Length: 114
Image (cartoon, rainbow, N blue to C red; front, top):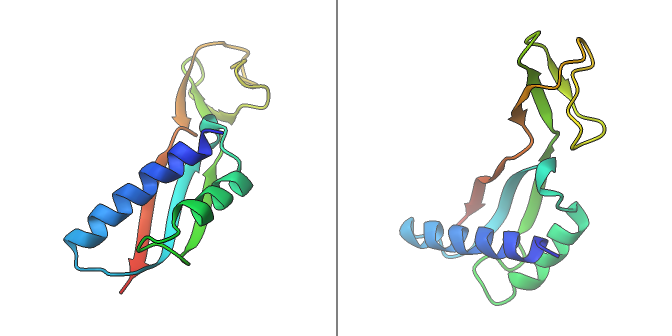
């Protein structure tokens, strides 16, 4: 369950940033995560609830934006979603050479607190 390590890192980052900005309690955290990470939203929420106990993030709402895996074909330049990952075949021209454009994100978009 790698969601625990993902959330642990997120909480540590938010705690450090909040301390730098004089924020004593965080109410809301917005996480952007790509499907490439394979993290389950329910597991992320559970890990957040457990790991934020007795921290400045305790009781905060975790909002998760999932980003789908999208590639750009190096042959025809069209973007497409991958339905049978890791098999990357352009549905437009059949080429097997593509660049990952979206889906590997992992960052805190923002957090709010007082």
